[in-house]
Length: 276
Image (tube, rainbow, N blue to C red):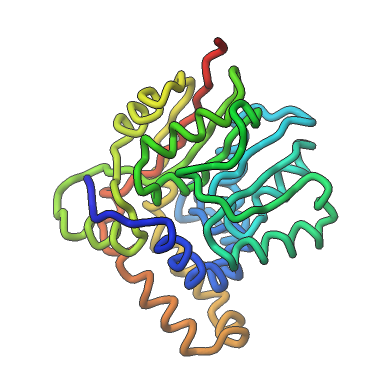
């Protein structure tokens, strides 16, 4: 399913507006959560971190490797990669808020020697060919103005034999399309591929797809559980940002909850750049 054209400046503004409060709710990780079932009492921040672990583990990272975090958010994932796997990380984002927050987070965690953050548009990266051993894209490909162009750029900067893992939303049911269009407009998605279409996008860019999974029922399917978990932090967020800002944050996200829980999936795809 496709929607309107959205450019990188729009995406930067989109995240500048949403990331400050989102950063507080999810501890520097703006991507989705993962709960096993409705009885899983894992706190929201830890449920979000499960997605970080689940996706990054498919990369098979080794100490000393150089990772591109494409769409790095406020930096918590990059810090985690450096500390957990002993890798170097370059994070790029088009959000000024996220760069500032990510640099602050790296300094607080003592990893500025291994982690850097830069303003970068992944439709035209400045890095030479074959610069990275691995690429991570946690819910950032969804905002690509041209998905094939972006995957082509990520393929270019990845060394032969290097790996890419990405996670993103997928279309599971085309029924009630108005609900899906509202979801896409809220998140500024130009398109919403099915799992098979995500795999084909990666293959057309030149990648050899090695692993994929669909875990939507434990991710978007737990949207009501997220609302309950977020409400546990409502008062502290309101105290920091004010009731008006919190109300605006909630208003901006109403469309996210519009689809039925079976309409939106969540895919993880891991692939490799062939060795020449």
